[in-house]
Image 1 (cartoon, rainbow, N blue to C red):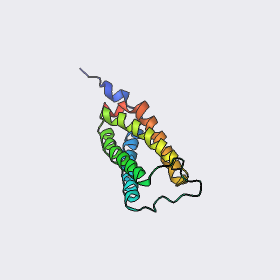
Image 2 (image 1 turned 90 degrees about the vertical axis):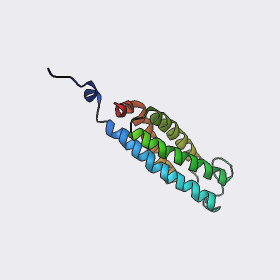
Image 3 (image 1 turned 180 degrees about the vertical axis):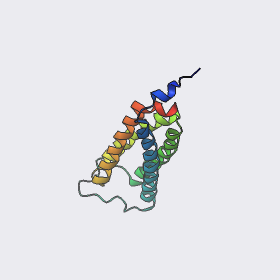
Image 4 (image 1 turned 45 degrees about the vertical axis):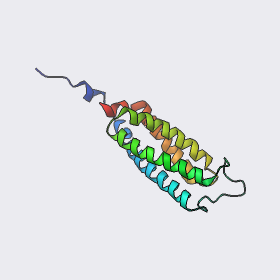
Length: 136
């Protein structure tokens, strides 16, 4: 008698986007962590115009924020790739936080910030709508 594999029929082409989100989380987490480390060790790293950043805080604090977001996104990216539920949840939360943080840095790095925000939106969509497929 033939058996029916229900899990195989529920997977869609969006599963590739979930894996893409995991890879992007790992990559962007690495870049965020490097950016945080550079900000901590180089006081002149953030060069902004007269208007300054959207928020006025110590650059060392932003260095720690970028480092923390980067390391957490790196770990959550591997969790997404292995289908862990906590990885999807943390990934969505971190993508939202990353988008907000990068909005604050649009004055310092406009092109980079917009690129990261766009990637964050894709990650949020892939994980929120199709993330469950990776666990099956």
